[in-house]
Image 1 (cartoon, rainbow, N blue to C red):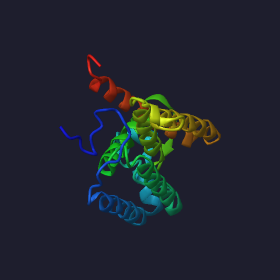
Image 2: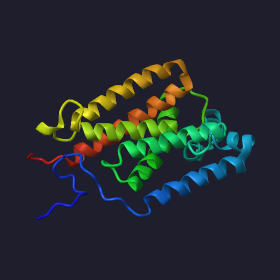
Image 3: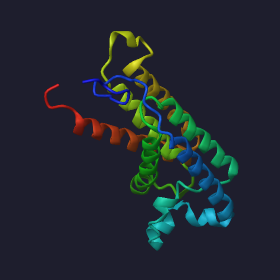
Image 4: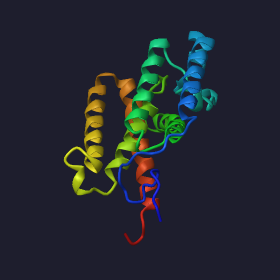
Length: 207
């Protein structure tokens, strides 16, 4: 049986077919975030961001869903948009863009749940935590693939390990910004956990 370009059953890192509407989906999402930022203004951002006191004391649990959608200002939003496109491009041959969007959408509330459960961070706004999670998840996915002789030192699974090492250095540097560090490491931990769980569930019983 002929294997398609989108088949990863052999555990190798290979090109995928592009979806004709995937780029359009990303553009629509970016425009929606920019429109939301302008529509809400500063007061609206404060009403939508992750706010521990409001969640715990006032029962505003919906902030776990909206906290990653709003940003401090337009430059903050544009930095995260650039980061989102950067992550999508780096892993474009590993994960289709629509699935990357879905991954970030899942990580956005999940990493805020981790913040709520395990930290005392008062408030957070922005998508960077989810983006760190998306990077970590896909880097680990790459690292868990089977290697082949042609991969070399910087190819295949080894590339995934290099990426994870770079992420660890980035998180270490973030310790100088405690709030950002907490969000970034929460996202990374959730991303790693999702990939590890998927790997454990999909691993053949008799490889």
